[in-house]
Amino acid sequence: MSKSISGFSKLSKSHKIDWIVATYFNNNNDAKNIIKQYWNSNLKLQQLHDEFIENTITNYYLPFGVAPNFLINGKMHAIPMAIEESSVVAAASKAAKFWSERGGFKAEVLSTTKIGQVHFMFHGDFKVLNTFFETVKPKLKEATKSITKNMEKRGGGILDIELRDKTESIEGYFQLHATFETLDAMGANFINSCLEQFAKTFREEALDYDSFSEKEKNIDVIMSILSNYVPDCLVRAEVSCPVKDLTENPLINPEEFANKFIQAVRIAEVEPFRAVTHNKGIMNGVDAVVLATGNDFRAVEAGVHAYASRSGRYTSLTHAKIEDGIFTFWIEIPLALGTVGGLTSLHPLVKLALELLHEPTARELMQIVAVAGLAQNFAALRSLTTTGIQEGHMKMHLMNILNQFEATNEEKAILIDYFKTHTASHSAVVEAINKLRI
Ligand code: MEV
Image (cartoon, rainbow, N blue to C red):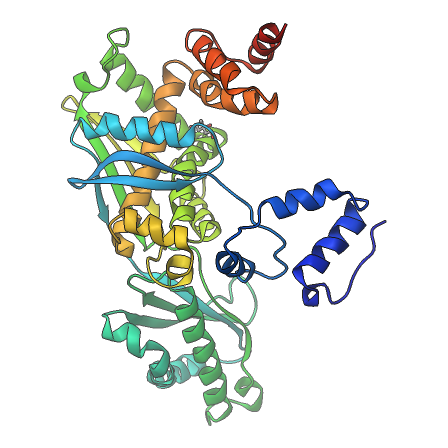
């Protein structure tokens, strides 16, 4: 059994590593070397990364790739993507090129409202609580003036605060349900600061409210926190073209392809087992851009999947139709993103990613991210309904297998060429390497 330790966070970085290597790696120097191999020689940059979180011992690299040729609302973009999965950037680039020759992607932000809640317990007369809430509501806003001042100057702030009765679910449970406009900020700190102030003012005012009984005066605030479910922070992206233009491959009939594609989307609309994988493919594109631009991919993931379940059944985030010979494929997803604050002004690669995207507003970034998700889904469904997914996947995965076998550059060149015309499965690649090495 490994030892526990107290005061770990207070140790220096090298002492932390010494402890980890002694406790978990039997003092093996290889482990120490791997950890140190990822340190950056630029000490300032390393310190920046060390200070992002507690107990940093090294950096964790992900490839930062670029998918060019994304024509979005008439403007060309090269989209930055941070992701480890071999085929994602290649698939996005292919889909981008394909649609850039067919009018590109159209995207629009449908709404930008974010939500936060103060959850509290009140055991008493709801009518009296409601009257108290109406009286105190202007004071709740007033008390947050110092927090909201700058946001209001820019046109954002608190949109509304409602009192919600949740006693059908839990006895005595109520909420202050607040809506916010946070403009180019993701808004988590802004929203949480407002909510904590609402809670404080609400509690304090209740203590002095004469119409409450002594028991009612003691409002029990459970917690104050934003919601990552943002169904009213919504973006839509679509592509469309005449069905006849849907494929350049003479071996594929465009009508057949379009119908099969639409059936594949329908299956994801009605069948949760398929919908989860379908949406996972969308999130390959979404998360990669969210991560590259320094946004919170866990928040996005949680919110998107909740949205996919809003009808009570988990379903596809994308939809497709053919009308009057025109194929249309679209996505609608909630995305709470920021292009100011957080990592955006701190992390040099995040800054570079945003510069590459021409310093987008949060609304523009929502459109770009939704497009990346749609493109990814198009590429996946096109492969799935034609060649199957493994052909493209294994081509991209080939390099991983070659690296596992420490193939030389010369071996790589020969085998990459060989697998242009042969089916690449794991065993076929291993066999080919072995043959080459005889
Ligand atoms: C793999 O990362 C993503 C796919 O499985 C998505 C899909 O099935 O639609 C290819």
